[in-house]
Length: 350
Image (cartoon, rainbow, N blue to C red):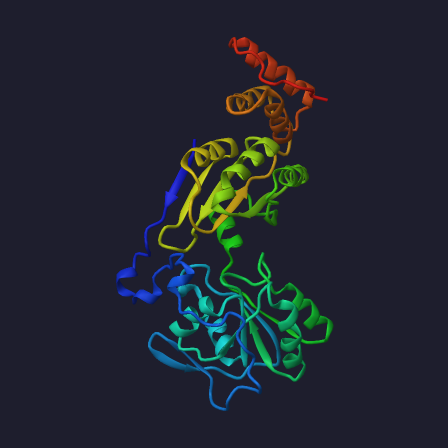
């Protein structure tokens, strides 16, 4: 049975200014319009004591050690920023970010005046040498993504690689991560997990990738978009079988939702409900460690036969249970013929 949890706003929200409330996904046209590519300052930051504002108090920030500081920022709730991250952003000579308009919401909230410059997939080839040149001169640059930890399905990897190759020190400043937030709330095993980013958008490539993932004895964590969610869940159900899973949406925001269930159930729900809005993380439980008993195989088949062809149902349950394919096929035939329903598109099973 599918279970879902819709989280209310934080219990102390009434005591917080509006800027501290969980953020919604605002359309970009509602944000201040400025040049996305930005411009690098000609020289180092103006002299003075860098600072940030916390709880209405102006807090001085020390000048940073030279190097590239990879800074995690909130994934939705501005209150999830760490004090070290604030000090780093305030003390850096430049903040390189995916979109200066998005990052400015954070810096303005905390009174940070560090120069923002856009660094993203589209301008990386031209901007990266400029940033590396400043790093080579001993400046401290903070790298942030729109939300969460940079380099986790975000730009920044090439900059870190080239900076490290040039002998520039990389400073991690950990914090919020949608991947870890989803993993700890899904209620699935956390002792061994694999993060695989976004599945391929093309159906054939997506199914091939799912087939590769099906052999891994670990919990799977994936990112997905609303428009592709139903199709991805359907392919995951066919390729992985009736594994338990959780769809985690809008984590840390006002409309945070975690919907738990078996993959076929979740696929059916979102096919009917339509594409959800917001940022989505899928967490999928690992395969069974030992071959399932006959009753478990029958129960799994009963759940998927109604929505899949016999061939696809057999493939999914074989992957999920570890039972030989011929045995699963025989039990599927017995189930379909036993209730008078003819096999659907049986096809080849070898």
